Length: 455
Image 1 (cartoon, one colour):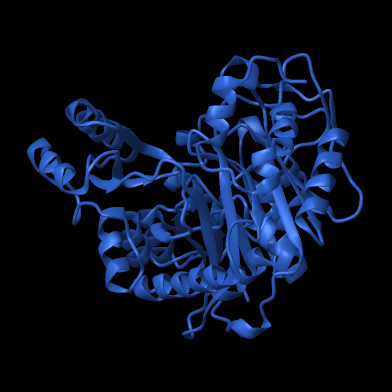
Image 2 (spheres, rainbow, N blue to C red):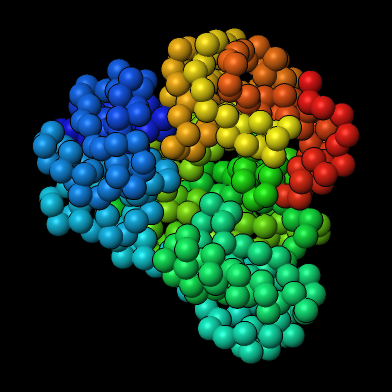
């Protein structure tokens, strides 16, 4: 096992990793920017290292600063969390060059799964269903128009190096393709440093379901069930749950088999997710592989009893998974709701400020992951996530009731900080969500039709 792990992140995921380190008996070292000098993980970790000023490019995204911090404190491993450097193959390789273990997939695998156009072909070869689309990246408008004519409209233009719901645009008719093709290539270049895009058929009312996998370095690949992530706003997840309310037992088993096959096909190591779309007829189609811990991993932990972050660390240390697929069982229903410092009444504008009152809910089977405490400041430099509220119950109806109660208890009071709690309460009370029939466009349609202010 490692002696010391540097946590190259901030907020709730940094604190989550620090807690796993303590339970494993591993020393933790937090990094922090000037803006985060009083953060929860700085207070909790065994030690903390300053890595730069508030802008992420000069602190959390600065590879030299992070590596210097690891060498300075004597860390023999780095946990990147999610976001920031978690999917940066160059960073993972630099860690290796400096004798530091990167807790995640190898640089080779990271490069492989980062090219989503390439991965489509690998998944098709591995027997996974993929949507009709281009065979690799599309370089010219003429080529895009020819492929679009073959697969039909509507379709999506996607950045090959994209992620997090960014670099994706829907084309509903042929006349829209030229401008959207050019704009998406420009967006891909600006966001990811790579203008490559590919085309895929668009499923307008699909569900989004992902399979969690764990893969050790000794040939074992396990899946831990699936998570339904269909409650989204503009492709950003708001609520996630396990198991999915829309899959039959047969579909669930099939998704697990696909997830394992996908992980094996790319030589995956560590914790990752294989994401799928489910159409109205219940057909699964592969979407992408995410090579990191997911924001929504706690729902799987609550329903399976598996500490995914601890398993990430054990795998990176070269240990074998100590259980088999038959040992994995999803019990009851777990639901996670993200609480963001955003104002839904003003276009989800981020709302930085001081948390005069911040009192998360408690009670049976209620978990809150947060990097904030009462009196802390929410700064404008980073993601607006305040907390993740996760509940578990024997049935889905009971889990929704528990989540409703917990959201009602969640107190955030500030002259400046508005949150998405009122919106979350309304969304989980909608008949489509209660019935488990909502799609990925449900939230956007709900917001477009809403006339009353949030309560």
